[in-house]
Length: 332
Image (cartoon, rainbow, N blue to C red):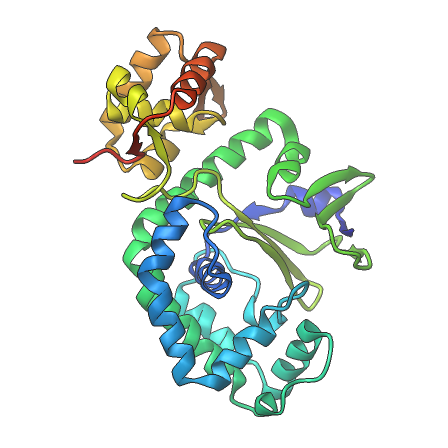
């Protein structure tokens, strides 16, 4: 397993950062795998995968670059610079573009764990990578960015509350598969057999993305990032569904809120994920609490809501009954 030695000062100074570039790269990984983990991702792939494949068919060098850069166990480092707080997409892409050709090729050899194809022995690889990232942003991420940003911000609120409730160990254990706090200042970042890294005194950031993926990156031993999938996958019209019987009983909007609360979520998070207004979500939560189906727990400045045992039974019974499904986001 790969783990980092993290002292108390580094962990105390760590923070969450929302990064457009991380979202773009996570979306590129999803396009590359062409394997959506839930209906929302599958719908997004149906919309954008044909254009992505056509782009690579017209540019075989960039196609090779993507396959080399997204290695099975290692991503080429120059593709994933550690995000800065508040950094826009163009500034982040400029850092990719500024990497030297020789350095980019060295990173690709490491991700491939071997020699480069002859077609990649060239100096314009950073420019090609930057252009591809800009295309992914413009065509597949920017149209959805406002809502995605809200989902990511809601995740940060929930994670921050989790720190106050259970400490950093609880957060690190739940970021993504393969991450956990090992004790003795050791943080496992993935399941790969890599040598430990001492990051005492370095800057450490945690970066949520909406696709169900993640990775780690670092720069010069001074800045480190852990990218992880946020809580609450994007729904969209073709996203996760709730049983029609539950919608008939509670109403589509209220059923969607109850279905999501298998894990604690804030009001802000529910608004972002369901697409419903703040007032509507608040009314649904009030009714569900009065009915004993949902409970709330204050965590810092936020209140996190989750289903009670009675709420779990109702959702499970409706799901087990079969029948039609309703979109998680009800029609407006």
